[in-house]
Image (cartoon, rainbow, N blue to C red; front, side):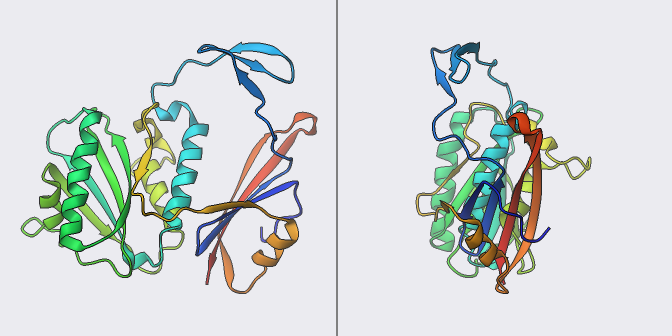
Length: 269
C-alpha cells in the first residue's frame, strides 16, 4: 500500500530498528467510555445504560481482542531488544512429567536463568507460558545477548541448556540475519498451528487470568507517541527504511459505516 493517506490519529511505536505506525480513522476517546459500578455491572456513560460484564473466559482464545493486544505488546518488546538477530536465542522448555502447577513455573525459571547466566554470561529475557492440550505447562524463552550469542550445543550427548533446566526437554534455536521483524516471526510461531495450517489456532492454549508473558527488568521498552501525518510520510518515504508488514482491521465507526485501521511496520535498512 505504501504511504497511507492522512487519518485522524497516528501512533508510532518506536522499537529502535523497527517502527510501527498505527493509523486510526477517528480520534481515540480521551476518557473511559464505561464506569465500573461493582463486580458484575458497569455504566455506559454515553447512554447511561447499566450492563452486566460478560462471564470471565476460560481461555485466552475466548477473548481475541485481549490476546491480540498482549501479543502486540510482546512483538514490540522483542523488536525493541533485537540489535542483531545473531544475538537472540529462542529456547523452549518442557517438563518430562505432566506438570500442571502454575505456581511452580516462577521458581523453576528463576533457577534456570541463574544457571544460564553462570554458563553464558549476562543476557536479558522474555518468556511466555503455554499450557498444552493435556494440561501440562511448557515455556518459550527469548534471550537477548549484547552482540553475537554464544554457541549452545543442542544434541542428546552435549546439551548444557537442558542440564541447566533440569526438568525435562529443551530445544534451542538461533536466527540468521535474513529474518526480518523477529517479533512478528516469533509471535506467529507462538499462535499459529503450522501442522493444521491455521493462524491463531494455538491461542486457546493461553489461559485467561494468567499473565501472557514476563520479562527481565533490564529489557529496553519501546516508546509510544502520537505523530503528525507529515512526520509519518517523511519517515515512510525515507530511503533508509522499508515496509516489512502491513495489515488492515475493519470495524464499525458510528454512522460512518465500515472503516479501516491500518498497521504498518518499517525496519531500517
